[in-house]
Image (cartoon, rainbow, N blue to C red; front, side, top):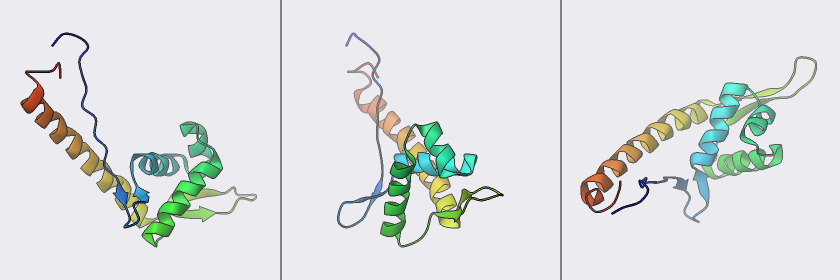
Length: 120
């Protein structure tokens, strides 16, 4: 098959019994940015997502998990900020690992099954 090289894409997320997203790539990126930058505000600037939108996603995930993901420090003379809870740290590391493993396996499966037929 002629044409541009194709790329395989796959996404995995956690959802509750009602089908509501609990954790996925978007929330992973948010928590990674908060961890790296130390605040929701800074994470929003980097990700080009408003503070309220980030807070809504984090709050929804916390409510659906029944546990907090962020420890928030109120601003003031010393400044505010946020840090990840142990659960959030675990989610970031382990979800990231699972996503990478799935990506590698998906790539290999598509290459083995369709590589000769498609430009993968």
